[in-house]
Image (cartoon, rainbow, N blue to C red):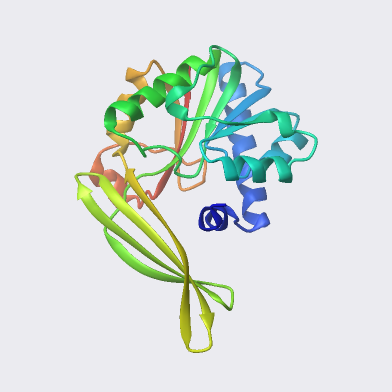
Length: 247
């Protein structure tokens, strides 16, 4: 079992609740803007399905896919009665055609493949949606080389490094340790290759895939991104963008 990956996705319940309320608000804004009603959601790279209870409580039919079998098994365990709604699948190989009202891709769940494959993923999102369907993506607006140490509670320590590989491609590594007296015991690590597309590039990619941009909100707010120029992103301290685009 991928314990280190499960641990990374096991965020405080308060955060999952607040993010879920934000996602619901984004959907309602799109419904009002487009004069439509959304019901059926596909969460791509759903992890353990930490938002799904709240989305279902709001009246949505939620389905989740993830390439990691351990995460899907945990999502089924955490969402009793909805086990059939979870499937192991690769976002590069989606076969859905016009089946969903909303495709949700949350919490930096895009950019882990080659540029060609990342563009294919966006086309797959587009094909999975019904006419007028909505894509919601939550992604960093910028990334930089860094090294940091984060303490989680009294006994867990995470050492995170981000190393630039090429342009906006980074190698991310999170190593988890447990305190034992004065020593740190290595538990495991999560290593990923991530492409963090500049907002202007991602906007073009979405449009190339067929999407029409509806909103781009900064830093988990409803404050719109006025410009995708790099200097504007830095000046306004835009760290993350919630992208809303429709078919």
